[in-house]
Amino acid sequence: MPFLGILGADAFTSAATSEYLKWTVTCGAVPSILNVVMAYLVRSEGSSLHASIGTMSGCIMNIILDPIFILPWGLGMGAAGAGLATFISNCLACGYFFVLLFIKRGRTYVCINPKKLKFKKSIILGICAVGIPASIQNLLNVTGMTVLNNFTADFGSDAVAAMGISQKLNMIPVQIALGFSQGIMPLVGYNYASGDVGRMKKTILFAGKIIAAFMAAVTVGYYFGAGALSGLFMENPTVVAYGTRFLRGLCLAMPFLCMDFLGVGVFQSCGLGKNALLFAILRKIVLEIPALFVLNKLFPLYGLAYAQFTAEIVLAAAAIAVMHGIIKNLEREKGRG
Image (cartoon, rainbow, N blue to C red; front, side, top):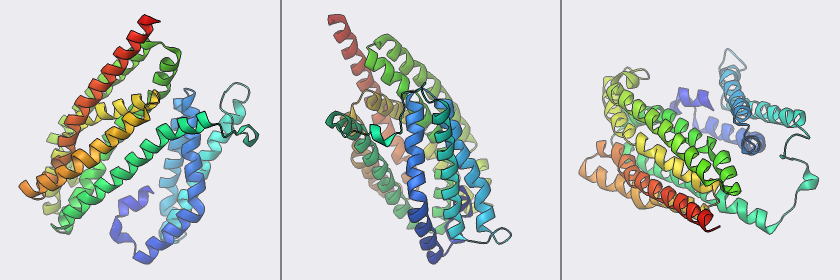
């Protein structure tokens, strides 16, 4: 729902929000979930390009359709139009994946035939071992964001607006880092399953070097360009001043965050769901959320932006250590074999 994010929360009334939720829940939930599942299926066979095309086609269509369905010069449907635009966009993305699988039929291991569906214990446990920790991680991310926003709200609407802008800007490189960690999962999984430890190690090291260098460069750019970036969204000097300081604090976590994401991606590729779950709990419950309370007490408002940085330093070190241990254990097992 990109256009709603651009307009901001004040653009819609509570009634309109309820109307939007009704549309998205009743109409958009199924194609949205199916879109995600199909993207993972396609990417699992190494077709990352097609997974990206299918996903981005839905995002681009959503951006195009939102103003057409929402605004008075278009269909003037308001919040319901946003839900309908999201529904149509997800259907388009799903259609791309279905056509792709039809074209590749006979040359792919991915099967969506309901007759082939079997509830085997090993399959269900394997899915839950990876999926449940990932779900809990997303839930904890929302919880952490809620705590952060509640603290920020105590300092007024300008602070809330500035924090929202800073978080949106910060999410751009964060999503790129997440994409890298998810992009290598199929390759790491293939090598892990085949016992090719050497290639698995090279894959992880290559991805780590690329994404760490990229995130370090982005951090420098964000830190020194925080004022200009915040000013792109608001002309209010108070909001820009808040946003500058917030963004400088948030961006410092980026080089460490990418190592954390990379580690979680490796854990999931190797079926180590417990490790991924442990890191999710460490990130939010043990480190970041307590850091929000402590830093806000010591440095009111401005300390909030450094909670993630504080948590990710610890998690990055832990991720590197655990990945190193996994590789060493696999090398020893291969040597004994």
